[in-house]
Image (cartoon, rainbow, N blue to C red):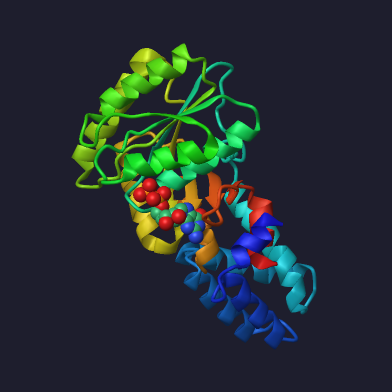
Length: 303
Ligand code: GDP
């Protein structure tokens, strides 16, 4: 329901275009497929994936011997899930690597994509599950980032470990991990700076932060979640590639899907990176973050 609602908010959205297409065609023909192709490309599914999807749709339509446009919805949903899950179904699971004791989750991504907001939303979710949550204000670079995280801390009732703006992020992480251990926290959510100067600097900065965490807890960080803004389309894909080359990314958070017709980016990311999408952001409010579920997501898109 959240998916259907969240993905439908935008009036110029993908669902609207799909509905419009279905309303105009009584039966499936070449023109129908051509328009569908255009919509999918416009939704950032990615050219190769669109071609694959259209070919498979045509085959299924033939096999099922249907010319009803509505039948396409179900088939598309099935194909979407198939393409997403692929052969590596297990690895593409959205489940987080949660530990018995402390789980450390590092968030990376460029400024403005929704990192801080996602951390706040997750803090709220974990807290409602009865977990003891803490946050680390590792973005010491962006003006206001620390305040913003503290605001989320107040809103969710979660402690934030911070230092002054401009201080060393690795020092903040050191403090945060020590504090989380000594206070018996279950989850530590770590913000990082979103500077994407060049790959080498990015790599060094993230490596340093990770090393500090690792020194305190050998298997940590247990998740490195890359946050990308779905509205930026192909740019999101390029960013994701850069980050993946700079550090081990265990999963993606795709934000702002409520405000875009580009929900197809999920498939493009899956094809290009092979990294599971773990969460999707469907709004600015505290509970507008959903675990990614390919089937629900596809239903939300095509419904
Ligand atoms: P950061 O610089 O990566 O930490 O980004 P912020 O968390 O400050 O988010 C930037 C803006 O995007 C803020 O105005 C957020 O409210 C907004 N935002 C974040 N996630 C979502 C989302 O899923 N949907 C919408 N509509 N807005 C979002």
